Image 1 (cartoon, rainbow over the protein chains, first blue to last red):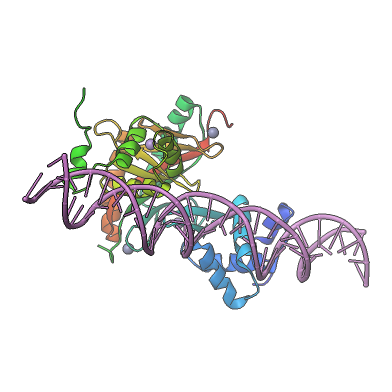
Image 2: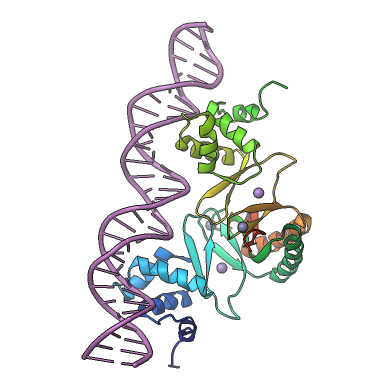
Length: 148
Length: 148
DNA sequence: ACAGAAATGGAAACCGTTATCATTAAGGAG
DNA sequence: CTCCTTAATGATAACGGTTTCCATTTCTGT
Ligand SMILES: [Mn+2]
Ligand SMILES: [Mn+2]
Ligand SMILES: [Zn+2]
Ligand SMILES: [Zn+2]
């Protein structure tokens, strides 16, 4: 199935060019279900394109986050982690974070109850504090099966 | 109402000494409802005790977190923030975080519904992923009244 | 092919935090 | 109170993730 990858349009919409580094980074993000750091992505990209620099990784990730194509998370291990947003597949979700080994588990169980509750909470809090809520983050911290 | 401050006992329980820097830091944390960074605390302490170094601020905050006297939060602005745990007064709670100016608002509305739901979620997730959950964090992101 | 603008890569700067180590001082024994 | 042991401290340097800078390259419309 050739043809331009699905993101070409997205780039052009905002006047951005479709470059090798950007494609390489999106390829890596597409091919994993993990929550990669900038350096993880750099190393993965480096195997096929050793000329691509770490600066470009950071710049591109910033761009992708601003474009709404990638989530940026901070799980408290001192570096940001990135996750591709695949429409209809990997949208908003919450996390279990192992404080032992740093493992991250996505979960969607109860997501609907959580989201329903949060809708209510958002409404009340917005009015009470005159605060325009745009998103929320939820994470459970603990020990994964290997670390207990 | 003189007498040793309420935390002297806590320190001695774990074989820690009650020092000027520790008291100064706890005094600052006691006297604010804000979510101070290490540097904020350093500057506040510095006014009265210019000899106290930033290293000691970090070390003491680590200690206080380990002792369960202080919460450490990461609101995504690249520095940790600290908040005194006042028993029966400022216990577990959630936050509104303004992405414009960084303002943090504590809230406890709906806290009970949230905690009830999270109890359920924790139970299901614990079993499903064999994950021992010890805590959770919830924050709503958006724009505060001044930043909209 | 050309020109103008956007994107890139390497080096250095940045900034919050941690490690090192010589010096100070808390607090128990006498 | 004085002495002694050892925890605690503070100045400095190191660390690690990220950002800035700027000269060079690459893309894209003409
Ligand atoms: Mn995820
Ligand atoms: Mn708070
Ligand atoms: Zn683990
Ligand atoms: Zn604000």
